[in-house]
Image 1 (cartoon, rainbow, N blue to C red):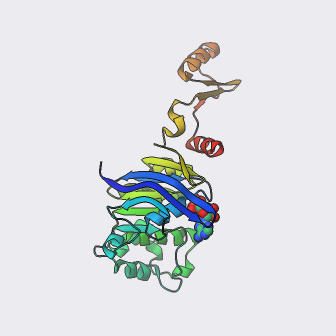
Image 2 (cartoon, helix red, strand yellow):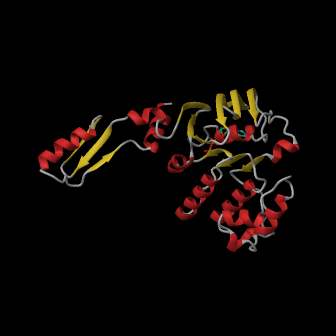
Image 3 (cartoon, helix red, strand yellow):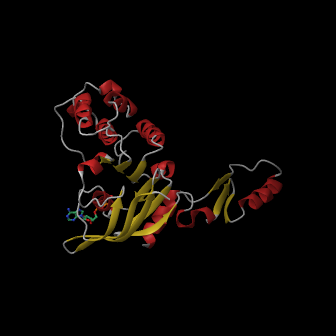
Length: 273
Ligand SMILES: Nc1ncnc2c1ncn2[C@@H]1O[C@H](COP(=O)(O)OP(=O)(O)OP(=O)(O)O)[C@@H](O)[C@H]1O
């Protein structure tokens, strides 16, 4: 398997605080990988080390075949970054800033096309200072995409998006099929929607890793069958429904079958850790 990101035993401390304590990660090319975890778990620290923006204290890291500890210009051009908080460029227009950033890259995307893809076409001439919070965030995403990156880092990309903008963003990310993406998010539905694999970080360690469907044994968890007069947790919901059909002689009133959501599993994993 072609690996875009390879990490072994990554460690980072801030004074006495061990923010990252021995993380192993492998992200394959073309994959979308989500890092989940509570505030302060070590996600941004990890991502910033991989981006070459922070020094590590220990471990091995390879990103697109190079150690980000000493980033070269050529390597930087292959990586797109959408940080949690972006710099201040309030006085220029959306098109000006995107066009300006395009000049840093050897093979940039078309600025107007990128502006359109993030849903800012109508705001192309607006000054950045006049954008709403969610629109500003879309501009950050545009700046991450303008260099046509092979690997895209998205640190909480949709914070402040309205539901429609979030869905549009998901479509955009799904359209980047060839791009490897490392995403952090606090929205579990976003991880479920976008990620091929997820890892949960808590206290600087990875406590679980898997696909969104199977994380933490999710696929084999019991189902809950709920109906107008009762509720049952069971491994065999089909059998329960068959029995209920006989009992009600047909349609079961207010029938629902649910399994733990990714959020349920996530909260359990974080609590256990
Ligand atoms: N520059 C710094 N100096 C000192 N401590 C820091 C620094 N950056 C982060 N930390 C601490 O390291 C820990 C991990 O922080 P990090 O930002 O990596 O967490 P996170 O998982 O990204 O959190 P969030 O979900 O809130 O963004 C936290 O306890 C944080 O306070």
